[in-house]
Image 1 (cartoon, rainbow, N blue to C red):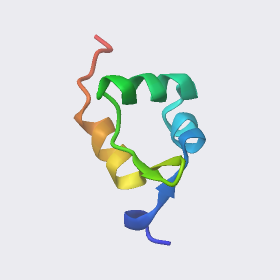
Image 2 (image 1 turned 180 degrees about the vertical axis):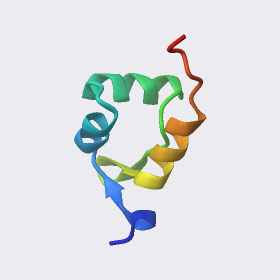
Image 3 (image 1 turned 135 degrees about the vertical axis):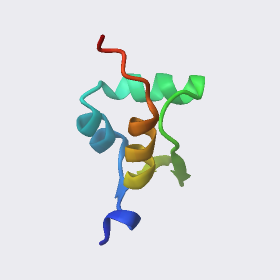
Image 4 (image 1 turned 60 degrees about the vertical axis):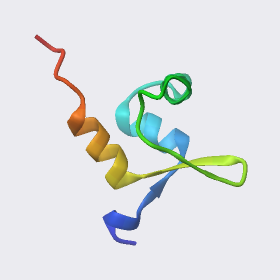
Length: 62
């Protein structure tokens, strides 16, 4: 599967971003996290969307 079409689960995205799954759910409820799609009763994230969202976040390390 190409990176463009790669789909990730909530657990995979949490591990990728190194945040708890609960943080992803909180971001989703406030509209501040990466876009997700409902597939039945499950959330799925396109990897390209997660990467684009991550790049768009301001650098707060300084």
